Amino acid sequence: MSMPAALEAMRRELEDAAVHLGKPHDLRFKPMFGGLMAYFDEQPCAWLTIDGLALKLAPADQPALLQLDGAARLIAKAGAAPSRHYIIVPAAVCRDTAQFAGWLAKSAAHATSATRSRPRR
Image 1 (tube, rainbow, N blue to C red):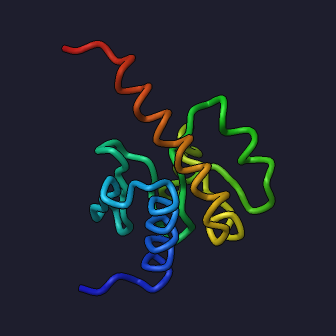
Image 2 (cartoon, one colour):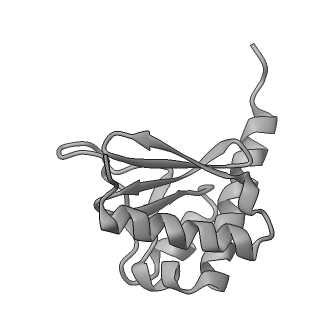
């Protein structure tokens, strides 16, 4: 089964950002709900959907991204509440590898800190 062209383009942009950070081998993708879930350093960092590429960000990082034209909270399916964690990245930012890599680094830092702060069960 082939991947839609839009998802393939978003995947390439995310891969380019990982290369820019010097960590191309730390990025993985898994099919999820008709899109792709991206994992960076084995932690979920992005959700690629037909609506766009959404990064998982810390609450403190979200307002700066949401200020940009084209950014919005991801709505995973019709009728669902907007995501508290995933923010759709404007296409112009995704195409700017250096800028996008900065956002990917913020997502990865949040995922790493969230993992460390969770108590083990």
